[in-house]
Image (cartoon, rainbow, N blue to C red; front, side, top):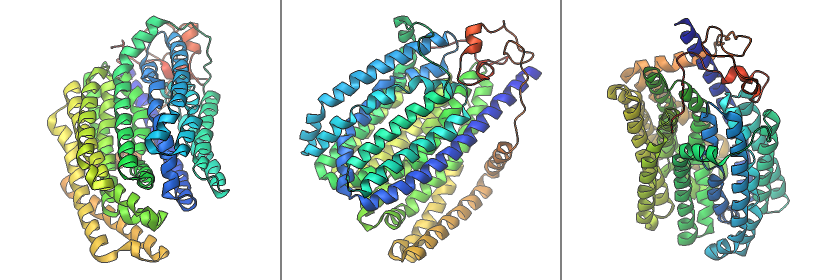
Length: 544
């Protein structure tokens, strides 16, 4: 029992550390990205951003194919890790090369679809990024396996800085959309260099095998299918906006989606990176996994609901004040996409629990709903322009997110009232706060019509008012939620107990034979063997 408690404490400490590091890194990265977005929006027109979006629409879609779900399968793998890593490395590298050549060959088609030779040239030039991206999959997987704090604190901010520095410099020199192309390559190269420097794994330590690839592919296929479906929907949105409207609207869509995805990206970065390996390790204990999922779902909802509500209330004036009046269309889109963050929050934590349990085939159901509903709504809302596209994105994200929660509830056997308590009460508080602040902005303050200093002060005031109302309502209808949030913050500031290890690398008191020399050597840091061992009652076998 003591060993189990020690293992839970150590694992919980690792999760808190990597979640805190992810939050810090994500905040820093978003601050840099926001600054870059503001500056580039002043240097480039919506049409120039739209041309870049048109030229890279295919490479953004194909990037998901290069990974093929194999990276997640490697993170989840418990045995034959070296062989699995070697197989994933070569499989993803070859697929990256093939996809780069396909993207290059398809560049004339991009030019034809968007009636722009510049878009075609950008598509051809951007094709090589797929190969660079594919080469980072294995080190990324190893760093995630061991809850690498360095990965969160170094790589993400470094990528943001590289992209911002190159893009802003070239945009100021008059490079137009090509500044974004160069910035994208700078971010790929920064990712590649930093993850390989942080990870001690190198290829040629084992032999890849077709059998291993098949095993990993069975696990990863539903995951890559879901990613491709999401990208396909975004591709369809971009094509509809670019063809049915124009490249100016596509530029508005690009920046509106970029801003609307900030909370969703933050949740995925903070939640998925830490929770997936953690859920995988405790999947053998159903009660422990279910309780951990409910706590994670509650925490995500408490954070995501107010962000979505605030985006609905002041999204348009915020974008206009920060980026300028020419980008009002992006602000309207941000307001319409307010539900994206909450829906992605539901989906992220629920899918990580399902993946950790090994039931990845269930994700195919979510994928089917996302494709059918997302594309169906997109066709219906074409006459409504950007607002219609934004509403389609929000509705699809919320429906799929709720479906994921229901699916995780069925897999983990959690109580329905616990799931409802974790989600409905924070959402109710956020809706009430959003309604009040939206009325305040529309009927009284009108922040986007004021001089910049006054406008920023009014936005800050509206944000404060939202927070007061949200926390006040939450304190009344769900005081336990506030206690949980406060407790999580306190635990995040408390150092986790350090685990004692035997000479063979396993936790003190744990059962099992000593680790082999290969197992004890693998990983990406001096103490990687300690990171990969399993305490008593953790997951004992793979499931497909």
